[in-house]
Structure formats: C-alpha cells, structure tokens
Image 1 (cartoon, rainbow, N blue to C red):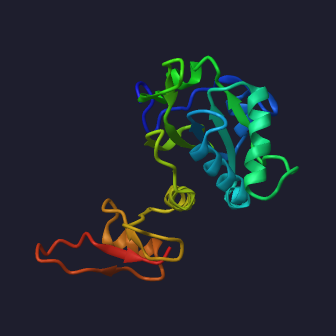
Image 2 (cartoon, rainbow, N blue to C red):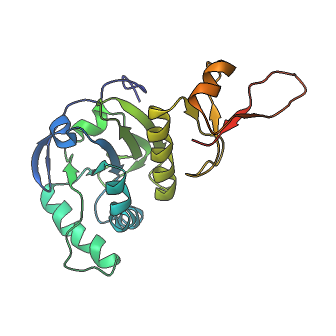
Length: 221
C-alpha cells in the first residue's frame, strides 16, 4: 500500500456513507476501528462477508471496535444492497449494524492502495481488493491485510488479531502462532529476566533449546 505503513496515522478522509457524511477520525472518536473494503455491491462473496460481519457485530462492539465498510458504488446502491445482506442472514427488515462508505469515484481506493489490477468490472475498471485496516485509538494503523477480490475473508481471524493487538498494546508480550485468548503468551525479548519476573507474577517458563539462548519465554497474561 503506497504511502501507508504500520504505525502511520490513518488518513482523516471525508466521505459519504449510509449514515451521512463523515470525517473518519470523528467517526472513530476514541475507539479502535476496522475498515474493510469490498469490490462491488450486489456481488456474491461480498454479500457473504457483510452478512458475517453483521452477525458478529456484537463481538466487535464488545472489544470497543467501530466497524465501517467501503465499496465502489453509491450510497443509494449500498442501502439497497444492505437489505439483501440482512435477508441473507434471515433478518430481512433489520438495519445493517454499521455504515458503508460510498467510493464510486474510487478516490479512497486509490489513496489507500486498494485496487486489484487483476479483477475488473464490465467497464474494464479495476475493482477494489478486499482490504482490512485496523486503526488504534491513537488513529494509527495497527494492522493491514490484503486479499484478492476472489477470496473471502475469515472474520474469526480478524477478531483474533484484534484480541492480540489490544493485549499487546497493554502488556509487554507477543502472541505466538495460532494464539487464542486464554492461551499463554510470549515475553518480548527486550525484557530482562528481572523485569519479566516483576511484570508477570504468574511466573515465566522458558523452553530450553539447543542454542542455549533463553528467548522462548512463556507466561499467562
């Protein structure tokens, strides 16, 4: 993504959405945020993704994460599409629990590096890829994942990485492969043994390895 790296302040863009015009930082307030883009309205994979996001929106809310989607069609199209999404969830008549940004001129898609050069609409214009951005309360980008338009996302994984991001923002730990909340975490290498003993009263266990280096240190958060 040209010009936007982990730790950068996320652009404070203005955009029309299904809840009116927003300024992104004002929309987030002091919360965490997740922005996920979609190639186009009324498309099959996107509909299953939005439906999943709607079903588990309470999980994002529990974590203090504000959700917002983006697609390259108009607000009016988004509103009609939202009805299909909720009907797919067998919740016809219920509102979509998060807004969708209208990016029909592809301005944000270009600014945020979202375009997929291999997937095009019937006019030959590139579609947006399936981007995910997680933004912290400090408005800085904490995570980005880029999927091609043909591959749907795993929203359980998005919740898992948010749990990791929020935990590691508060404690001097890192989460190992396939970590889930409740599992042991790893003490970051920059902490001395004395500092680790003070910070982690539950104790620290070290896995012995042939190198003799004591870097595989585990604890309960």
